[in-house]
Length: 295
Image 1 (cartoon, rainbow, N blue to C red):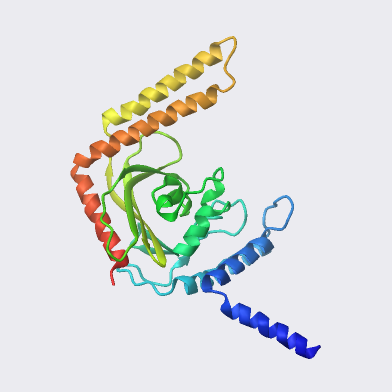
Image 2 (tube, rainbow, N blue to C red):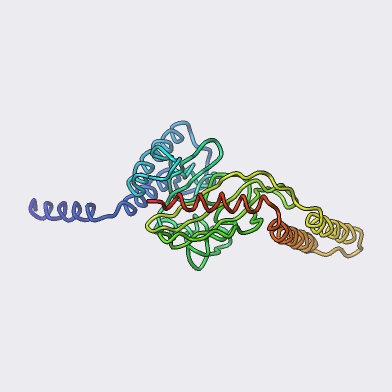
């Protein structure tokens, strides 16, 4: 009996040793989530549960540092903070991209993960695939999507692509993408003040948010949205006054506003190319991309 038990323990130890750092992280994270979110209707966490969650994130954060390893990117120092802000189901920062968060100055943010974790995340219903089960065909495609950047960080506003920045992929990277962006909670014109960058340099994936000098939406572009919004308002008002209002009028008017917003963003992306700010932003994005993979 003792011999059999010794064999079992030896096999268990060998299996544990064989597990990769990523597998150890995933196992610990999932175990913590299961413990912190028991079956049944969710309830507000107690002080004890909150402290338990904080300790759990510290633990899985240490495991994440073992996955990522030392970072050697100019301007980004320290061991990095665990990017997932909460392990409680339903919290805004639950289910964001597994990785480490580094900062440079006050405004430049870098999230570092691995190709394995990122690929798992974009396919997970708790990650990027949470939105209507949508799954990008691959990681490169995911890095061009607004939803990826919205869900990859803890900002409370949605990302909108305001035009791709034509960066060149370094030889040591598999993929590089950059875009001007704005973050909004509602449709409509908002100044562009950010660039977002995604780089795949196996085994790592880098996601950068950096500020740019604000660029206002050009009047002809803004008019495209304003006109669509006005048409949507008239359509809704006409339906309300009708003796037989449409049941799906809200969906129709929202679709009209979304088309107007899309037209505005496409207009901006085309016109901004002749703005000196575009060349400056492209240069800034290329410098960041090159720094990420510099040896």
